[in-house]
Image 1: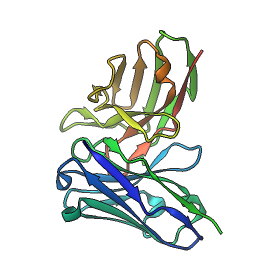
Image 2: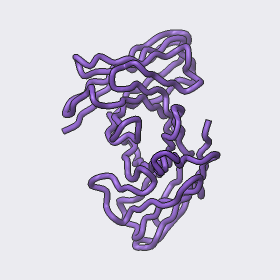
Image 3: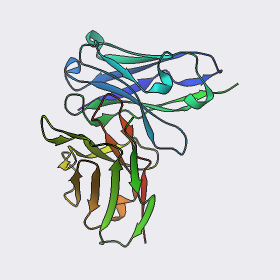
Image 4: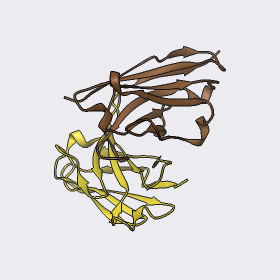
Length: 119
Length: 113
C-alpha cells in the first residue's frame, strides 16, 4: 500500500525557515516524480514544486523561487522541502504527492502538514 | 503560466441527476507529439487531500466509479457525474500538467439540491 507521510510543519515567524519531509513507502520510490502542493485556508490547491526521479530536475512556482528548495534521498525513500524567508502568504497545509505516471497527475497524496507563518 | 478557469463556481444537483463541470485552459494542453491532453480532475472533501479522478482528460483512475467521466480536448474540458450520489458532495478541481508550471482551476463546489 502506498503511503506518504509529511512532517516538519509548525508555527514560524516571518523570515524564518522550516524543512518539510515526506516519507514514502509501498512503491519503488526512485521510479517516481514527486511533488509538493499547498492549500491555504479556504483556497484551492497550489502546485509548489516538483522533482524528477533522480533529483536532477526541479521546478518551482514563481512565488517560491529562490526561497524554497526541493530535494530527495532515494536511499531513504524520502523527499524534502526546505523553506526559507517564509512569508505570511506561505501559510497553508503542505501536501506531498506521487505522480501516477512520469511527470504526470498526482495519484497519491499525504494527509498534509500545516505551516503557519505569523509573528 | 497556463490559467485554468472552471465554471460554474458551484452547482446544486438533485440526487440521481447529472452534474457537469467545465474547465477552460488559457492555452492548449494537447501535446501534438503524443496526442494526449495533459489535464486531470480531482475531488476534494473537507479535511482530506485531493483525490485523483481522471487523467489524460478522459482516463478514469483505478477504483473511481464509472459515473465519473471526463471529456474534451485542447482548451475545453468537462467532468460529468452521470448520476449524482450523496457521497459526491465535494469540491472538484481541474489541473494541467502540460508544462513545468502546473496549475489548478479555482474549484467547483457540488451540492445536493
